Image 1 (tube, rainbow, N blue to C red):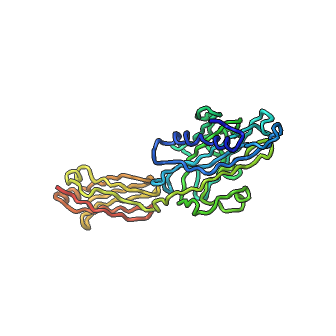
Image 2: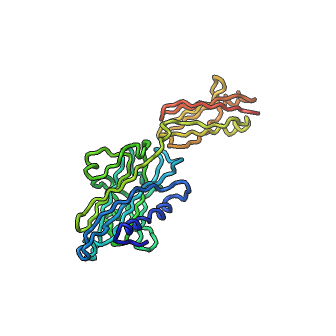
Image 3: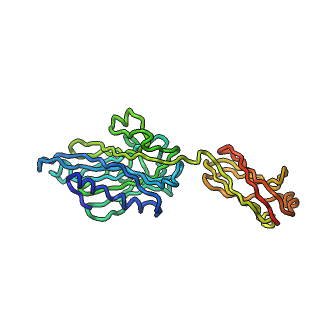
Length: 327
């Protein structure tokens, strides 16, 4: 990787994420990065009497368009770096930056033990490597959550030729429409007075010894709607009677909200032959096994048509499935 003091050099500055961020998350072929246009600052170099590229930044996010939905964890990232020293190369003082992440309504950070912040850096043409000073959490910034260089609150030191990538987990409670959701804020004034659209923005405050500019790269995000609160039930169409009498019947629920209660009833006509109640359900798939009662085992000695009835509290719903018990 080579950093030049020109627009072409600035473009070369932002190539790290395409190689490292893909390795930062799980090795899947379908998820891909969607990156916005890079933005840059300029610095006047009095030594050369010329204007040079100062710092460069870009925002992006990673999803699988076919499977990522509202409620799923996905990743955003910020890529940023410097092409020259403070004051345009007339000193050997590094530029520095503070990194704020500006999120649209309904989108939040999803940092936990499974989904961590990940950081990488590269210098000039060297290969990228993991940054040991990656923060484990965000603090309150000026315009949104702020990632400092380490958890001690330090700024990101940007010597000429260095590029950083900060990868952070996100989750959205709603569908995101991308360009259909409206234009992204372009200035600090827009951030203060305009409604935030379906955009991921990076607010990078650069200390360059001249203008100390804010760079505001963005990328419009598209996330498919979630399950819409719809729960589902999956049960086998047939079951051997001997297995039903000894093992019970396993059914699988897809639960969009955690914390609710499910009551599973196994019926033969109007008679209840088995029942199970499970509280504090976790989100997503839950497998429950309802066993026959003593009266049910006594009653079911031959083949029978059964009905599984599931009553949920979160969301409030009643689900049904038919099962044939065969000898």
